[in-house]
Length: 595
Image 1 (cartoon, rainbow, N blue to C red):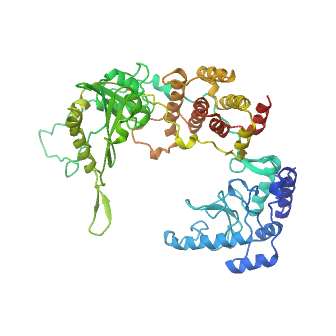
Image 2 (cartoon, one colour):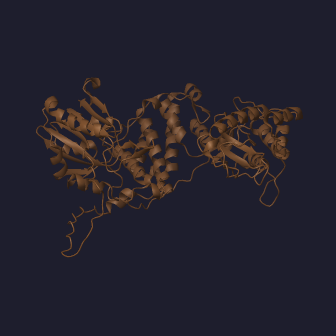
Image 3 (cartoon, one colour):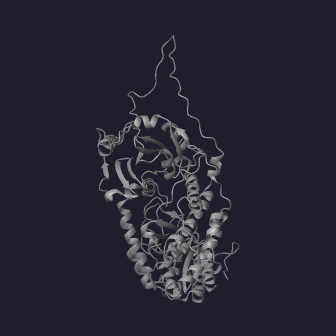
């Protein structure tokens, strides 16, 4: 047992390493074998000469216990801090980081002598190898005389250095020993002994039960009314007055929304294909009203689309929200039995995309892409650049959008009046976004998941037995995340446990449930943003980070279920095991395989 407690002094570095070695010898002998023998006093003295730094006594004591570890399979790592470095690695990595620091010295205030006012100080030593076992991150020890002498800090090459929770190397090594003996978390991870090796797993997460549903709240929130047009103030009949404003007129922002035209498809049918579910949000709106409503709590971050017709073609425009009309998943649905032409503009890029019978037409031969440079920055006489306010940043793409819109007449016989489509009320509704395609890169079998040899398990386990075990793991995952709160999910799991494979039907009950969960997570995501990063008129959300994380975990569990239904078992198994929350999932898997 650990001898460290809040009321007792820290054990010595030597005692802490002895406890680490004893635990590894008993529980993870392969990792114990990776601990190197002590460094000699001569090796330490030579390193001090090369670096021009006298090592802190606690570092000397640590190196005299073990000269770091062998960087090989099973090396004992200190959570995400990586393995402890030996003398040679400390010298090599410290010299490298000094050279990097010299290149950025001018970014720091020379008059600020605080310890952390530097990229890398001469007296800092990198004492662990970091996550990737290189000099990109890790723990450093300051040997610089002063108030912070002997403190342990966190280094990461993409962020400013900071001090860790450990006031000394002695405290850090003692925390390592405590974590092993008591299975205490370090940086959110707990140590485990698996197949004779030390690994670190993310600690079992506590998931908020009954996270706040912003979609339920939205259903109880009235849609905002159109803003009244304020009359221009009348000048006083007597006396002088002044008008305060811009010296020149602002260039109005071009109204060029994403637009999709579908041959022979009605406006109502286009709303359904785009993902509008139910009739609660369906009514006529202008483009301006749609933008106002989509930005409100009533919409709960869901996109809003409007639909109409132009001759023999139906059309959709999107006024606000996450882009839908550029998504292949949506274009396939819109072009299920017809031809669609999409005109979309995003910053510098304007695209024409053509689909026919649910597929890219002629393998994209009729698609067009126009990219334009940004033009709202000007160079001042002193050579600096300044941004022009109130101008179109990409006039080239604005002109290209207009040209491509005009070109629809000759290419497809479509004479589209954009101004009319924007200003007239059109039938519209909120979208429950369709599920994203499963990325192709994630559809390949994974030989290893979370330090677990999944490839060997698949090879030695009969497919029916493996399927039964993964179905049980799915059931556990659903319980951990709260996904089993929905009848559509529990019904599907019961069918799977009977050995059947139910189909995930587009717009079916399970599909809609999965889409609703994704919409809940998207609605709660702004809760992660600090207030200063939100839009000025953004509504206050009664949701927290815990709400978002709970919804996101349910989305992940639903994705694992989807993969189980649609992908080969070895591929689906990797997703199920990867998303398990309990740190005991390995022993639970062994139980499920033995059933």
